[in-house]
Length: 355
Image 1 (cartoon, helix red, strand yellow):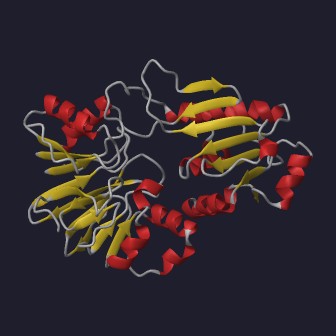
Image 2: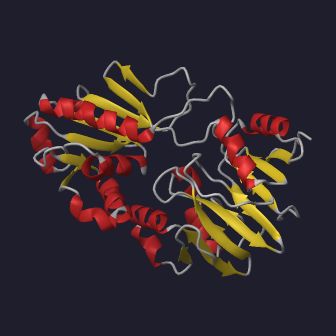
């Protein structure tokens, strides 16, 4: 049954991870059998894993247009379901569950916080977010991402500078006629390709340098950046004939692969660029070398200090840290309570309170 509390993190039977976040009668990033209205914050798998169940149950599913484009690129059949409602940032959608708004989260393209106003109460689910450079709307109740819930993870990244350095390092390899593999998660992968083709301020890579990626990642790229599609060079399909001609000829190229794609053994000696959005301490550099390449950190989760600043602006009276997506949630609840003793703060689905 649905809790009487206005916000919650609710796991189904035998579920302990990636549970639905409840904002009144809206269920975010997960499935609940009592729900009729759902919302997705972004298209990373730990947030859309229950999408099939949600489509089978919910009457309405709200998300940002970019997120829907990415979801339907992964499975074209989802596009034809009538439940979808797409919202641009900070536009109001009125429904029986209240007024729902999506707010920019600065995590990946299309990522959003979810804000609900109903029965005189305002509720916010942060989703995965990076502060600052996000939209702020005050809320009485806040469910908070806990990915960086340990104060040792206080490092910050200037993402544009890191992407520029990555571009320059790869250009150096291209000038030496060496092929490169770039590995990243969906969303980040597309952001990198767009930066290389459009956003980098200096001299661009020559168009005779082939870009390669999987069919699904290329589909996501062209869907979420459909207005810029004509600015991208032709991108070869990974594991197709033209790609293997490049490999056999040891030609320079840039191969963009998601982490869940197995790298063929014939490519093991290629220079490897690994891109992630991971937790790190301030004394650690955002760019590090490895035995076979380089690692670049595009940190996309708020640090503890940024979380504190975010809470100051949102001004919640009650705050829940999401333990179904991070084991740091209880520790983060304690830290927040120390900084804001007036806030009723606890982690869920753990029932232990820290007030």
